[in-house]
Length: 443
Ligand code: NAD
Image 1 (cartoon, rainbow, N blue to C red):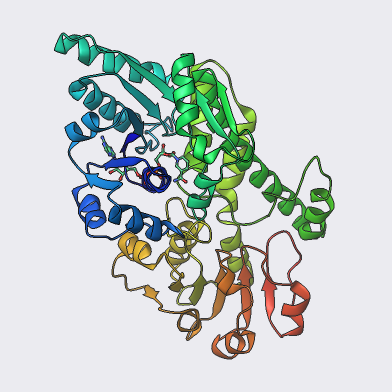
Image 2 (cartoon, helix red, strand yellow; image 1 turned 90 degrees about the vertical axis):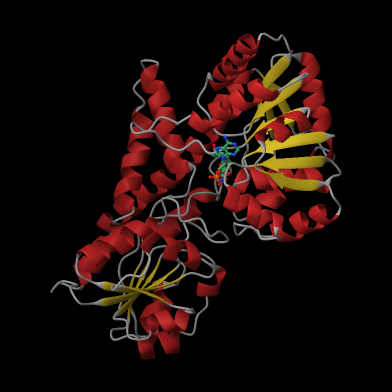
């Protein structure tokens, strides 16, 4: 089948590569010339495990191509996926500029029936706006061409995106027309073999499903962070509490790790956008507002601990920071808690020596050459000459480091662990002063 994907970011590129991998002909369209040039020269602009291989293989087989030519994109595929960004507007609502610009291109260049499939995360009612936009361009062109607009939210996780796409837990499709629903079911059939994962529903419900999923996950995180904050005040250990509640099958263990708050390109903006949608429809969403507020505070929680430890202030102090990406296995720095931590430390007059296994280019792009930021090329280099270590992302490589080296090379044997990856008993026995989240300080 011929498929066009608008937007070659995390979602568009993974979607395109995976559809090509199962034998389809895919054309990926992006307006970012540099991104398309990079892809055409075999470079993958993002870090995503397994993506390089399938992109390279499918380019070689001629099933995957990249272009900036919108007309070519519209003319190519019966299936027209929209996978462009929906960043927050000034008031937190989703900015639909890019989605509607793709709709305009489709209306402008389509010559025959097209199925327009929205994969971007968009507020309820956006499919109607896309339909209207295409319709109005067709009227201007004075042509009458049939088309359908479908909502197909994407649930892949950065860091495991290829796997999630190839083996999805569910394929949600919001579609009003039974014939189009069956075409979509067929398109997704290679990813729907072992058991039924295709969940068809009306368009508005599909649009809301994506926000509800992300808001639920963000709620679990903020809830657990709130329990961590209570645990700290009452002298309990949140990790014991986590195990105690996770073993209840109605609660489960996933997404209840306390930490320094959620980040990334989805949870923060999606929680906000859902809250704005509710507000526009006259509903005051107290839970969503609380989820956001708790997360906002949590991002500074580790800095409060640092300030509490260095009671004479941290002006002139140097902090090694391990882990910068908003979560492991990605280079995505959008809304990463590390950014808040770095910025607060710098604003207190401290300096940082930062290291991340894959996000260094992104961090350099954000902060540039900076007198107070040293970009280390390995974890050891970040530690050398630092006063204390701050762990912000739970990359595997930080889980069992050379603690002797850390103690030897730090001016003070103090570790601030924003992800609870070390055992407090072990850290104390090893001679560290150790702070973590929701557990009493040690040492
Ligand atoms: P991204 O910023 O990585 O990529 C978006 C791409 O769209 C960019 O390359 C941009 O140049 C391109 N673009 C913008 N306007 C265009 C146009 N008119 N025509 C063609 N290309 C255009 O974004 P992303 O992370 O892939 O997210 C895309 C959407 O999917 C968002 O709505 C997001 O909320 C949603 N989503 C993201 C994830 C994730 O983990 N990143 C997961 C599920 C859903």
